[in-house]
Image (tube, rainbow, N blue to C red; front, side, top):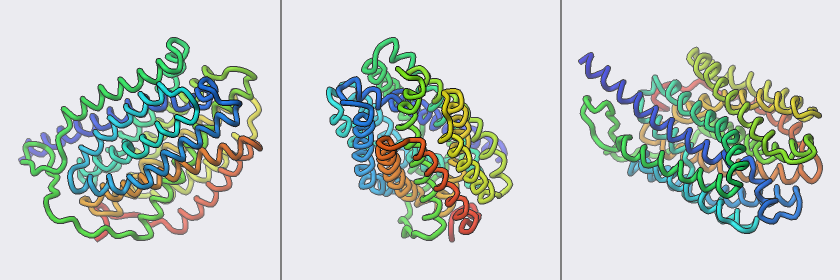
Length: 407
């Protein structure tokens, strides 16, 4: 019996590592080119910097609208037919996005590429949903911390590698190469991660059984609060992704490709450290609300400092700290979503989260486009005010969930 349990845990760990690998490589491939999209828009014909951000925002809006519709559908299909299938589908779809972005000839065509990405992809919620049913509820926090750490390590590697590849092969070569990398990792996941909807013997290591009829999916305040926090974290991330290269270009006074790559590399490494330091330790002590509220206050303060930065070094410093704090909040938020529904409905819950992410992908870039015509620094200060309000909401409204979801 003991050997069976040890074997089961070993298989679960291997599967979680494969999910983390797929998430990390795909996120690296996407963030390889995404921070440079405003500069790429200038390359393919945008009239000026504000026009470049406008088309990035429009592309993100197209992605958001598509995912707003498709996210819940993919979530329900995941609960009915398998979270693995949805994860693999999302990975291959991310590769398709890279291939289309790499061949566009005008800024408006980005809307087509990102619209298809929103309709077909969404690999991060899919990865989290699959992870949440791969391990017992008592190990969800550590498993999600690993997957999220891999996601943010991808964020660190992607822009740094992207800066090198853009200099070596140009924008198109770098973007198309990222798509090939995603195809390879998606094929690896498809081959070596077992399906999660099949009955398995204890020796197989995974005992997920979803043959029973699905219970009704119920929305309640705690799930909505966790999903709203998920939206906020992605919205402010999207705002920074779109804004950073333009702000740095203004500070540098010329081409900012290499500086942008450095900023996102530091931010990605800091993100992984934040997950390890906060999500991996503080959350084990059942102080999720305190951790999230405290991190929100710090996020507010650092956004104010970012808004006041007038040098490249200062901007990168506060950008790095913000990345650490933002990432540290993600495993806790994912865990809140997972533990506020039953195991059988986690695909649906993260489908809802995918829709929240979709709205964030619209709100963040559109806000950046709006503030770009006035002052992106003012936009960072407004984000600081929003995070202060979020800290109060968390402190007053959040309750610690019990493993296994609501009864």
